[in-house]
Length: 77
Image (cartoon, rainbow, N blue to C red; front, side, top):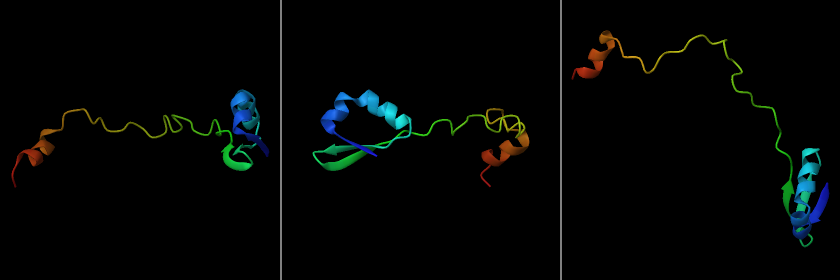
């Protein structure tokens, strides 16, 4: 774990980001007091369309409702 001051972090932010992306934990300190930890966000864990083609067709929510169901919404019973 590497600790740097706020001033050093401002000056070397790109290098610190590269180090964090390489797996290193960077601690930013005000004076000698650690206040922030800079770590990389894990990439590639979320995939859109993971179940694409496996669930079948879903309902068409924009299609008109059949008359057999509409009467329920239009009656006061």
